[in-house]
Amino acid sequence: MFRSTGLIARHSMALVFRERTVSFLTVLFMALVLVSAYLGWSATTTVNAIYQSAAAFLTSTHQPIPPNPVLNTSPLSLLRNMSTYVSLIGSLASIVIGFQLVAMDRKGGVVPLIGVRPMAGNAYALGKVFALVALVLGLVGAAACVSVMTFQILPEFRLDGTGWRHLTLFFGTSALYMGLFGLMGLASGAYAKSETVSLLIPVTLWLTVTFIFPQLTSNIHPTAALNPVKALVDPPHSSFFTYAELVLGPVSLADAYKVLSARLLEFLPPGHVIRSVVSPATTLVMATVFSIGLAIVSLRKMDMTKGDYDA
Amino acid sequence: MISIDKLSKAYGAHVALHKLTLEIEAGEIFGFLGHNGAGKTTAIHMLTTLMKPSSGTARIAGHDIRADPISVRRAIGYVPENVRLYDTMTARENLTFFARLSGVGEVQECIEETLELLKCPELTDRLVGSFSKGQRQRIGLAQAILHRPDILFLDEPSSGLDPLGMKTLRELIVQLNEELGMTIFMNTHLIGEVVKVATSIGILSQGQLVFHDTIDAVRHNYGSDANLEDLYLSVTPVSQAVRVA
Image: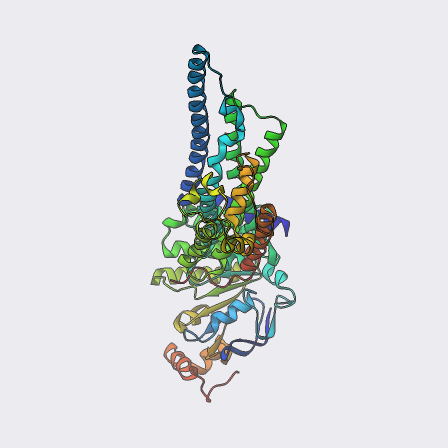
């Protein structure tokens, strides 16, 4: 079974690289990683430059010099925009990758040709899941390389051991978050009868999780959800938000990812309260396990007699 | 070689195939005739293990389709109606994938031999997306015989082909049967086509086998192609006059 699984995974990866939409979203995601690093560096150096000239002026006028605000922030917060790009473009790219991994077989009409090969029932499903995992890890790995290079190039932003550990965990969390949306794309690509519906299902789930749940649990206006700092403001102390977070917290994946990434990139506001009964890390792990199960069941139940989606 | 025992498939109240019982010997070219919707494709889907039967079973090259589907798949090749492959890949890339999935050892040698056999080596490194219907059909046939199966299932192989394409396909079917000794199970609704290559025929109507005999016996009993057409039309839908031989 492992040989067939490996074959399916390698073949699927080779095919997905030829898809223009996937290539476009991958390039866009990588460009945003670079932009994130640049914006973080630019904002910090601007503040630092202003501080230096203010400090020079204060010294010349014999006034006390306040501490440099740049030194009060973690160098990791340089990457705070990354959490937004992951939850927006990264997740969308993963959905498209997951969908394409199945859609290219269905649209190619080769599903029955694969179905008559001598391989175990799980080989196809596992091959697709492994291909998705490898592609998401590759994407996140490339983003991590850019971030590491940024820290190597800029001497004023040095990470200690804890910083490197947090950075690694941040990219691990990002891979988990993107992966679970990719798995939804995979499941939907296999389950839905129509191509349009199979893309709409995971995109609708993503929109709900990213923009609607945060509004209900944290009183965040949808556009504010794009701002990594505003998105972490505590909700009003009303019974509605208390109960909404209790109920929706365990499925509010974008909230869980934002809190976790803010904690790992060290820009979580002090005293931020999590009212959900399930911790953000548990929420993401549970959602990933559920998505893996959903993807495998959908792929196993896929009608192997048919090729294409319904018109 | 193919032993079908009361094979049935029902979708709720609709019975697509009703207790199909049939024996096909090794080396035969079996033409499975019937109108569109008669249940031919359902039968082929179950025999190729793509679909589970509602009841009954079949043995393909000695392996039960329910108990040992993987062994069945090793023994068969399948060409669906309207063959479609990965358009963004070359014929070689497509065939390499299917050969590896079928467990073929010397993949590249096998691909070259197969395309030589099918008289289309010039297609090897061209993108499948640029192929005509006939060329696509050949690569579709190639993917099915890469592992040299004992039995080849063809679902409406002449669908969409022009007269020359149909003639070439007939020649290829006979060649595969004679040179590689493959037993061929071919679904079609074109009686004129099937009598030119088949050694035996079965006629399916509304999910039931209503006629089965060797082509020699059919020719002896019914004579000309026109009479064969009359036979086909008389047994579809189910006629009381002719029953399973």
